[in-house]
Length: 210
Image (cartoon, rainbow, N blue to C red; front, side):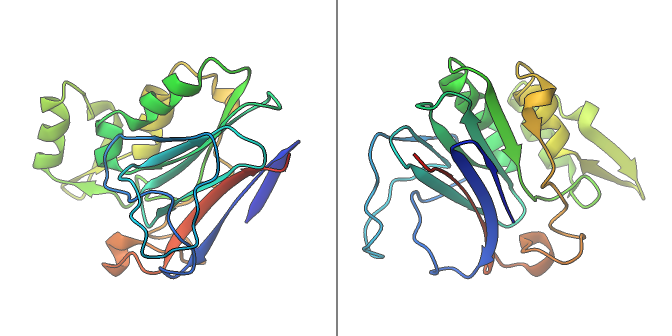
């Protein structure tokens, strides 16, 4: 699955671990790596920094993240020399503010856009009381994004991100064409919740062609 906008291209694919090399070691946190030149990806044994997002601003930059239920979020601007970014946004990273952090880093650029790829949907994201308490302890309220059915609470991570974390961004600049639930949609996509494994996984990428 691919798309493009002027000098920006993006896409996602399903691949086994090891088919491509990571830019960062994803740890469900809120750190974002800033790149002003390409990182060498030739050595599979090289130590990579711990982070859950990458922002790059150089000619022909390309960045990517891996997911298997978490939200893959891509940022780009309409400025020819503007940055691009890829963010791995699971519920832990979202609770820690990684999406707001990425937005704050990029909000000074003209006409910022966000694309959100496949992830677990509210149809399948059942949560327990400890999940709700963790959000409340962080002075966040998940209650507007919970649905009660069959005596269980289901959380809408996508709506939380688009309505809360990205509240300052015009909704017309948030693109959800790619979004579908990784757990229950068909054809099936990698889902840790369904398969208890993140191998294979989704690699979501964005690059500048100039």
